[in-house]
Amino acid sequence: MDHFGALGAFVRTAETRSFTEAGRRVGVSSSAVGKAVARLEAELGVRLFHRSTRAITLTAEGELFLERCRRIFAEFEVARRELTQAAGKPQGKLRIGLPQLGMSLMPHLIAFQQTYGEVELELEFSDRLVNVIEEGFDAVIRIGELQDSRLTLRRLSGYSHRLVASPRYLDQKGTPTHPSELGAHSCLRYRYPTSGKLDPWPLVVEEGSGVDVSATATANAIEPLLVMALAGSGIACLPDFYVESAVAEGLLVPVLERYVRDHRTVGILWPSSRQSLPKISAFVEFMVARMA
Image: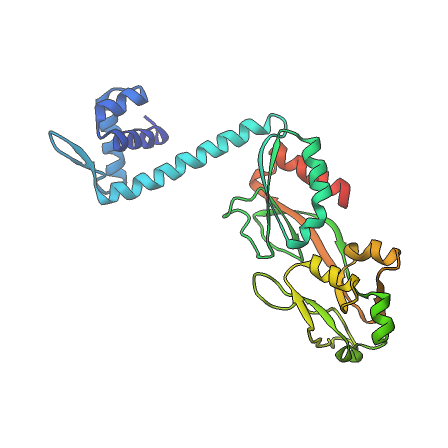
């Protein structure tokens, strides 16, 4: 019996508390199971079972080893399913992590689901830095640069921020011509929901010199800031794709554009070990085709 078979014999013995029943389930004799377990014990240098004429029970070391073996078999089963799926069409659950700004990607995600009807999307929106592999994500869309040798990266279209206000607000309060004038204005700020920190406005007066901006109102989501800006409540710093149509329609007016220095990189990442899965490769290629 090979090592993998010996591990299986040990797990079955631990579950049934019987060499005879374990042998029946594995398809070998009870003596073969007993010998396989004995060889494991000799190699590990510990006793895995307490044996008596009436019962077989796990030792403390055996309990620990059983937990490890179950993890090994669980990983093997995942790998087996993945390889089976790799030969087929995109299907199954696809767990995607997205930032809060990812709500703007919903048209793409809906189009993907309509194209690949056998893929079940599970979406998690959060600005926290998730651990892609440890938390079981199939892919994540992330803002900013990232270095992790375990992940594969494809870049999507990036974006920039614009400072905008409604024409009504600017008529009442005046249009700022320099960042130093923002102290006299109502500034609508984004606060990260995970850290509670305010997202700094990307304003540069001199090379390497930023600008401190006070907050008249804050929100931990983008949509309320956009609504307040449209209502004339103040100046907001918002992603360009969020305000594009409002600016084109004259509902919002960009301000201080010469002082804004900003570009955010957006990428899609997934575990390198799962690259061959049809559901992942289909999702990546679909999103790149629509956004790159």
